[in-house]
Length: 295
Image (cartoon, rainbow, N blue to C red):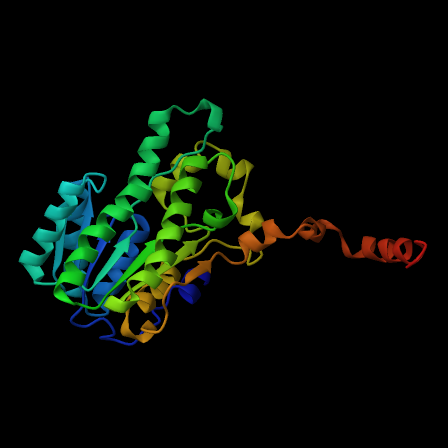
C-alpha cells in the first residue's frame, strides 16, 4: 500500500540520542509528525504553540509512544518576551537546546486587494517575526555559551517564486528564506547551522481547510500539479527533518531542500502543460514541425 511504502522511518535507532529539540507549532500537523519521529530517534522535545491543551495532548501521546521527555510550553512567538520565557523554561527543564525547528505558520487564500493591513500583519508576524524572534533569542544564548546548534526553518517553494492569492505568506516565507541563507554564513563561525525545508503537498487538517475550504480541494485538485502523482506522507518530511537536525548533516549549511514530488518545477517550465497532449497527437505535431520552413 502507498502509505506503508512511503511511511517508513529512515535513520537508525538512537540517531538523535541526547539531543533536545524545540519545535514551534509542535502540537499538530507537520510539527507533531516531526516531533514524534525525533522522539523515536532518542531526542527530548519542547513543543510550543498558543494552544496549551493541544500541546499537552500531543506531549502525552509522544511520551507514551516513545518514552522520551516532551515539555509543552504555551507561547505566542510574535511576542519576544514570551519567546525569552520559552527559552528559560526549556533551559530549566533540560539545561540546553540543541536544535530549533521554526515550524509555526499561518496562511489563507484571498485576492490581495481584499486584505486589510491587519490580515497581512497576522501572517507576517507569525511566519517571519516569530521565526526571527525565536532565532534571535536562542541564537544569542548559543553564542554566549559557545554551544554548537542547528536551526531548521520550514519555508515553501513559493518563497523564491512568489505566489498569487497567498501574498502575505509568500512575503513572510521569502523573508525566512533570506534569514536562513544569511545566518548560515554569518553564524557558521559559532558552529550554528541553518537549513530549510520547502514542502509541497503534505495535507494537514487545519491548514488544508483554510487554503482549500469547502469543495475547492475537489475542484482544484492540487495533486494534478504533482509529477509524482500523489501527496507527500508526513513521515517523508519527518525523515528529512531528522537528517537535517542530526549530526549526519553537519556539513550541510545554508541549504533549502525541496520535497514536493516535482510540483514547483512543473509549474515553472514554460511548456510543461504539453503533457496533456495525447500520444497520437504527437505524430501530427511532428509532421507539422518538419514542414515548418527552416527546420
